[in-house]
Image 1 (cartoon, rainbow, N blue to C red):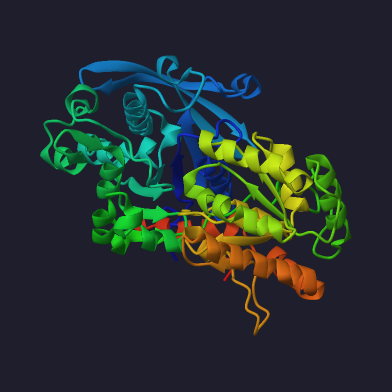
Image 2: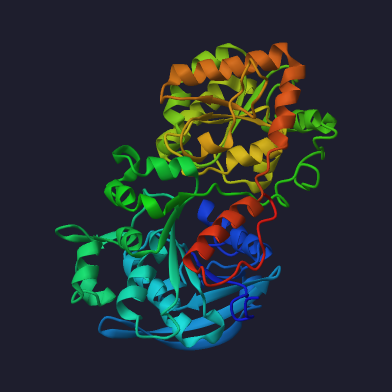
Length: 499
């Protein structure tokens, strides 16, 4: 029998620049708020560490307890760092406190972002050394804001016994954002200019360094947020200049599809929608559609397919295709509703369509969480023709509510939506392949044809979509496989129960 020393919970410290409900700008915040909790259920001892932003709601700030404070060496300077702690729903969150860096009106977009998140990465390494309760087996880093942690651990902390056995996992949520800065940071902030290995692997051109590149080169395991995106990152079109690294390290690169918080996104219990329903009784979905049409000023006609789009209004989301195809779609009597904010030209274009098509089209240029719940519940089709999509959450949420997604075959959209097959009846939505507006419109109108002519089949597809498991349990077990692969000396505390 193994000794107790070998049978214990793996300690996972999840480092993220944002986490719900404290701070969020995108999908990373959802992941950091949900995955660590699922890891605990899968048998790990998990905690989250993030910056203590000035925008964190006061109700949470008031509940934080001071754990430690120390100074973090950043090249020639020593910078104050406090560690605060808050337990929320059974999960420990730790906050790196430095008001000069983090007490601001937003999370990102400042001239000194490079210094702010270099400090954050270095502070995490110092905290592992100096705060006993932050000792860990695996430091799980996310995106460029924490990508320097594997670099610092390898080059500056190998002599610390608390760090000798720490393995690093680096997850890429969106390769578009890499943290590129002038190379003066190497000596002035990072303190790595005199270490050839670090210097050479951080440079991305003769005058610039790249935080993300450093993390990808130094981490013990690389992951991204869907299997297809892991494959795409190795291509020049998607790799944003880092594809050679993904190809070189493909043997340690794994794509794990994200999950969603199924307690929040549940039409049976959702308090934000007009009427609750479930796969066992879909009757109230029609009432959700009627109420949504009323709320948005659309014609209250149940025979019109209601196509919804929810999210950022940017080119990445394939909105150019929608704009090109809009007139042809609207001529067929389809209703379209859009919710989101983004690029000024996209916002203006959809305001124009809103005015042009009256009670058949609505564009709400806003961030409205309650309305998003109503749109997932009240729509018939979710349109998501993204140029690229590392994972995507909207299509998973839509399926949970029986709103069939229509997506382009890329990244997590390809991995999560099973296309309708007219011969077998399989499918949880609809897919098209190319960045082509006519192909998208043909697929959309083909879906509408089923809605108009075969409600029995449409209901079957809805039920198949609602039956798909997008809980975090599946993803957490896949991450546990990676963690235990890095620490084979620790016997699995809680074996996979979903296989």
